[in-house]
Length: 144
Image (cartoon, rainbow, N blue to C red; front, side):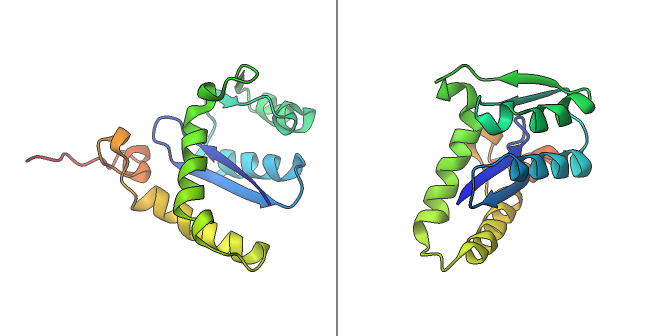
């Protein structure tokens, strides 16, 4: 199964995600369109140079909304470090811990995980706030 996630770089919030048993463009476009409909239009959208993200189907959606396209350098994993860190967390905190029965079971587990990731999982780089707290401006001050 293949997983795509659209995240907000500043808050690390997962805005939308999809899984597919084929590495095609359609599920990536679906995730992008959901993120744009639910969360609005960013100024810049960053991806790696995967064929699904460089496709006319994907880039035309960004162009239609007037979004500037930023693509990572070829082979430069650190350009997309926020998504790479998300993948590490998903694998170690969800995927590697479960023997999934089928794709439906995987989707249910990912739904729970991303809800936890956005709403209750504190991030050191966000001053121990959740992505939702930062994204929605609900940050709380912590005092000792």
